Length: 419
Figure 1: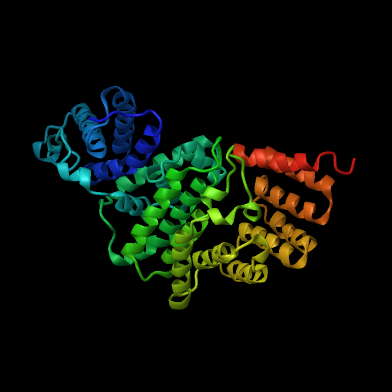
Figure 2: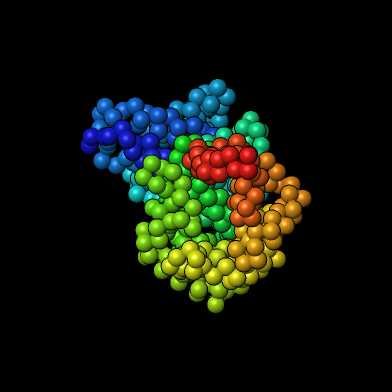
C-alpha cells in the first residue's frame, strides 16, 4: 500500500471506472449489476485508500471488490428466485458459477475498447448508444448527458436504464464485433468519442473550463480505434482533430482560470509535437481516403494551428473548407462556424446574414453559442449596444462558469456603450 493524497484521487478513480466495468461485464454480462458494483467499489476506494493507502494494483483492487459485489447481488437474486435446477444455476448468470475473486489477468487487461463497441450495440437506437457510452465509458453524470441531449435528467436516466436492459436482453457477448458489424458501429463510435472530447475540452457545466480526464480518454480510445482500423480516413481525421485542438490547451486559459480566445492566445505555448502529428494524420487521410466530416474539421483546425499569428490565418481557405463541410454534413453548428469565417473574409454583416439560417433551423434555440457569435459579429460592426446585450444574453444561457465569466467580461468592456 502507498499513501494517497486526496487531490487527484477522484480523477484516478474516474479514469479506472471504465476499465473495471469492462472487466466485470466480460465475466458477468449483467450491465446493471456490474455498474452498481463498480460504483460501490469506487466509493469504498474513496473511503479506504486515504486511510489505508493505495493498493499496489488499484485496478485489480477495484475489480476484486466490485466482483464480490456482483457475486453477492446475483446470489441474492438467485436465492430470491429459489431456483432448484442445479444445471440452470450453473449457467453464466447462476450464482454457483460465480467466484469471490476476479482472475488476476483481469487487472492487466484493458477492456475499454470492447466496452465502447458494446455500448454501440445495434439493438440500441443511436441516441441510446451515445448516452450509454458517455455514461459507461466517458464517466459523465446523467445530468451532464441530459444537458448535452437537451432533455430532462429523469428522461435521460430512463433512457440509459432501458439501454442497459436492451443490451442484456439482446444477449450481447463482451467481445469485439465481427468485421461487417464493426464497420456499421464505427460511425456511432466516432460520434461518441467526438462528443466525449468536446465535453472534456469545454465542459458544459461547472467551475472548470475543461475536464482533462475526458479529453485524454477520448484521445486514447481514438488511438485504439485507429490501431484497429489503420486505413480508415475518418478515424485518422478524428484523431487529428483532437490532437490539433488539444495542442492549444495550455494557452486557452489565464493564470486565474479565465478563458482566452483563439485570436488572443500565446501561440508559442501550443504543443508543436501534437500539431505536427495532427497535420501529418489529416494530410495523409485527405490524400488517401474518401473525404469525410472529421477530416474536414481537422483540416480547418490545421489551418488555424499552422498560422504563426492570428492575423496570418488563411480565412479564405477556412471558408472553403466550411462550405464543403456544410454540403457533406450540414448542421446549424457548421453554419454558425462558417458565419464567423465569412465575417473574417467578407465583413461582419455577411456573417450576421448567415445567422438567420441558424435561427430558422431552431436546433440552437436557447443555446448560448448563437448569441455569443452574434455578439462578436455585432461588436465587429461597431454596434456596441446590441453587442453588449447579446453578450449578456449568452452569459445567462451558458452553464459553464468560465464561459459565463468571459462573456460577462466582454459585456463589461463595452460598459455603457451608446448610452
